[in-house]
Amino acid sequence: MRIYSNDEISVIWRPEKCIHARECVKGLPAVFNKDRSPWVNMQGASSEKIIEVVGRCPSGALTCKRRSEDELEGEDMGASEVHGTAQIKTAKNGPLLVEGDVALLDSGGNVLAGEGTYALCRCGGSKKKPFCDGTHLQIGFDDSK
Image 1 (cartoon, one colour):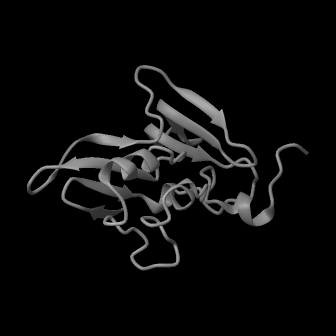
Image 2 (tube, rainbow, N blue to C red):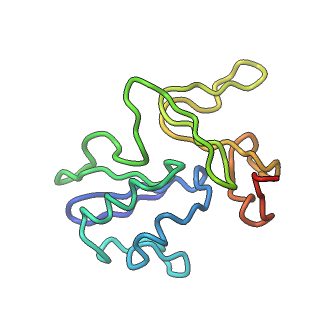
């Protein structure tokens, strides 16, 4: 997990959840630029705009929190948070997006993922199965076939 902050908010990036949908880099390239280090520039746009674009992250890899003086406060603000219900959506040519309070268990009954948002591989090529690692982009996965 990596945290990038300005005076008002912090963006939390969980790279292990990223499915490389690129909603962040397409939506706000002045802030999110994979060719720059660090790749998140919190001075590149207003906090409101950053919150808006982070909210488009389908996997929940990017979330935001409002800042207090010395620590993060409040709940994560991020991708399509669903309260009191759960959804599983299919991303075109991409993973299954699980949102809400849905436990994913392995064959031994151990919890692999719980509440929040996570992405499950549909292409079969992920090296993090059952989770998506973005391989569908590299192999040209087409869900219409």
